[in-house]
Length: 258
Image (cartoon, one colour):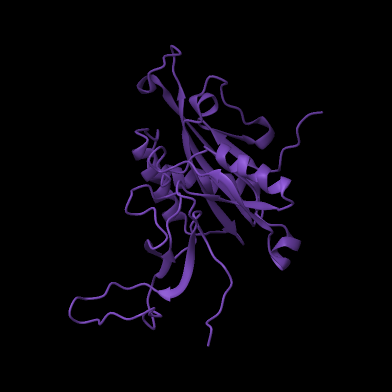
């Protein structure tokens, strides 16, 4: 039986095509070695959500992997928008990918490879289905360890998902629907309701179990996660901060005792 492809449009090496016709070489390092980076941006009611931020992260990942995009930022943005236009989608999942590419001589030297750029737009899809969004998702805290940041930089989006896949099978075996992976010390970071601030010596008096400032832009993140690797970070008392969702941070529903 031929595989079913979602409706949508792909772009590969200068050509737009239906998703069912999009192909790369079996010798591409993105396929052979998962040597690639990507980013995903959503389109909602024909509007891109934070396209500039996603492109910035994609370009930063490319630089860290010492790859080179074959064209400039303006061209990249135009390709993504053209994929959506040709796909005729109001709500879309739009992905941009750069692989290490193919070496003309099948060399093992990554410097010899010619990068492959891929983009595509398909209908928007939820991580959780309608029922799960209403009732919540049953999560399993797996024994599977997340790939440590000392091995692979987690700020570079990549397709190294075998740790997650192994954890998902643990979750399914336990009757759960999705999984949470631990870091090397068994920790999981979580959001805290308190705003984050740095006390000024001599001005802010130390408090016992403070609730944090009344307002702020970032919240406290308690505990380390798979993003952290140093001996000073791998501890429950470690504190980080953030203002947006992150793939290494969870939360729990709780309330103040009073």
